[in-house]
Length: 256
Image (cartoon, rainbow, N blue to C red; front, side, top):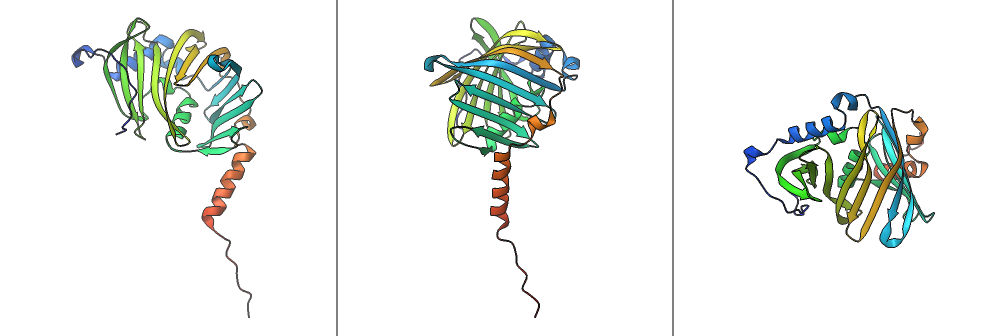
């Protein structure tokens, strides 16, 4: 089990007073449109504004997700551009400051969940999940679900006991050798047919705090196949890694 856990302070009623994980997730699905509505979603695209108030920076964020993969791109004040995606099971990143890289391990799993449709209404990819109590989030009672994924990475979710909506998540993310605690609050749920989606996300990663405001979102729109292809820079990394593992090509001695 992981040595680092997201932290929160809440009350723990008797277990027989708490709903099951499946009941909490089902209620979220019902509150946002129902499982039948989610089943009709084949793609999602959105545009938004991302801001870093402490640094006085802002930029544009776009995303495209389909059954074949997904990618999310950020352009911050024309200073840095970051693109991250999942294509044919390969997680990757293009960064104008740090260059291209293939994402692996816990970080890749987190990105896959972010860029896979309908992961918000299932916990099947987690090795354990349990409702542990009730905590107040901005004065609202919320059921707390503690989860652990297949890489032993912990996550904590907070669902409004009345509306059923997801209010907050706490995660521990490992990225390029560093570990970060990330808290994300969700708000301004709006109907983006056929389901309700949060259009405001406030992310607190300690020293880095950012706000994401979705300005437009669509479901079930056609996404050009080439927009989700593996970037040339990532293909080059894959080819280099394959050559390194295969070793030098064998040569055949000429016949005597």
